[in-house]
Image 1 (cartoon, helix red, strand yellow):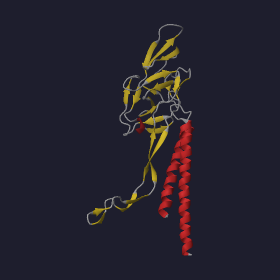
Image 2 (cartoon, helix red, strand yellow; image 1 turned 90 degrees about the horizontal axis):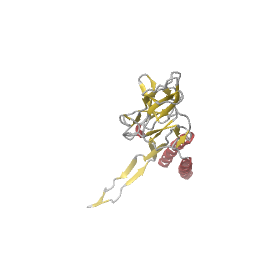
Image 3 (cartoon, one colour; image 1 turned 135 degrees about the vertical axis):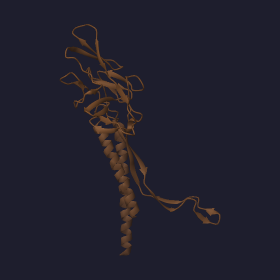
Image 4 (cartoon, one colour; image 1 turned 180 degrees about the vertical axis):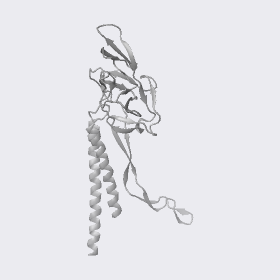
Length: 262
């Protein structure tokens, strides 16, 4: 009976983490460039009471063994980098990536982060920065006399000065990708950092090497589908209830044994 109590409790703990993950996905349904999390579960260790193929007599063996499991646990949490919906904003500094790439920003002198959030702004010097003030890398500086900023799908940045005239190129935006984007470490603030699991970063111009293209005056919405999350939430709740019922049944059986002793 004690085994059943602990086994069911492990299932409740796993489903609690599932609910926590779903709650975080739903909370970020309107977060620009957010990528949903998904948990993977695995069974815990087994107690082997009889090995499969154990001898039962002369030249005979058991066709099956006897193993009792000890529950379930969460194996990993994975980011799903599926493309989110692209929505127009009419802000010339809002950029959306159509593809697998990331923007690179620089929080500190010796630190870099990667993001899908393309809601950039200009600081006092005209440098493109994110909402935290981290400059885009390579840096793009818009001159103070620019009247319009034009960013092409391949990342070329041009500005218009005065009325009419020919656009002047002031730089280019690079995109970055990883062999295993799900191996990136989420840092919060829509930022990710490179890890050994993600593989080394690869940089390329937009539209080359699978990085995707840039869409100006648009942002990428979260890839969370609320309906899917609500269905998963109901399933997690029901699984939690069933595990709690297994605990109640085990408790009732233990109580019956105690009553027999009395």
